[in-house]
Length: 345
Image 1 (cartoon, rainbow, N blue to C red):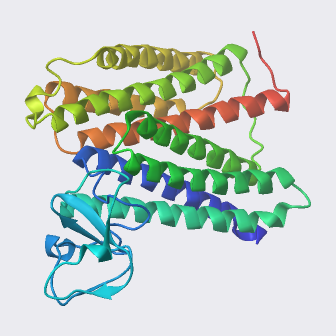
Image 2 (spheres, rainbow, N blue to C red):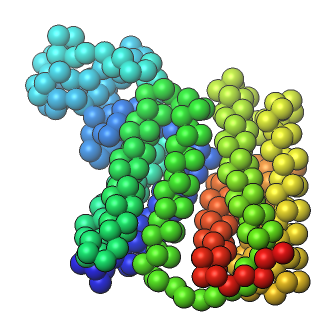
């Protein structure tokens, strides 16, 4: 089992990032309520593609839990039964977790694919945790942390259900995103520990501290960004479907998000300068600046070019990748410190 642990850890990280990408596509397309129930979708393991499936029809078989849209409300079958020539409401119960009762096949399948990605990532994490038992005698912490990831993935699934039941409550959406980044960080730590790297770079206390600050700032930016996205969702729900008007009168969190991005950018430019001038050897700082440049570009596209297709998803995914790279840098800096190689000021 031990021989598969590192590969399964990397696969788990890739799939978690795939879930983040799928989640970004859900937000970009407004598909969060594409499946009004959880874990099934309209009561089906494979969701419908046509609204007729969700309409009452005579002489048709329904399975327990399968849904119909009737009189602008959702109803689910109490048990397995077959319809006759008229609807019998004794066979149905009204769905009361929320009152959203619309069907959009595109939204439904985008949300369904998001859930499939989540399930695949969950299975990969379980396989990783099982394979971690090969380290039980030598490195028990890898076993414990691997199973922590499994627990957090289960918690994420539960959070996903509460997001649906709350009809996309902003706080729960933000918590859902932050928890995804926590899982990313833990998986990166697991991979680094399993690789047992021994490279030694120069240690600088100031650089390490500012790296940590930069990581925290990125997390704050993600939270602010989700709040800005929620404001846009509110605009759409209010009937403003013209993207030219979405940011005409933005809230304070938009200005905070935009201004704070300059602080994040300047801080990382300074970190790049420190790394180069002190010859610390952290090559990933180049990736940080590249990702930040793309982040700024997608932000400009959304703000000044009225949200071109894909820009919102790219902005969110780039932020999560940036967080991952920065967390790797923090681990590298911390490892050098524990190695005792210090040029601390």
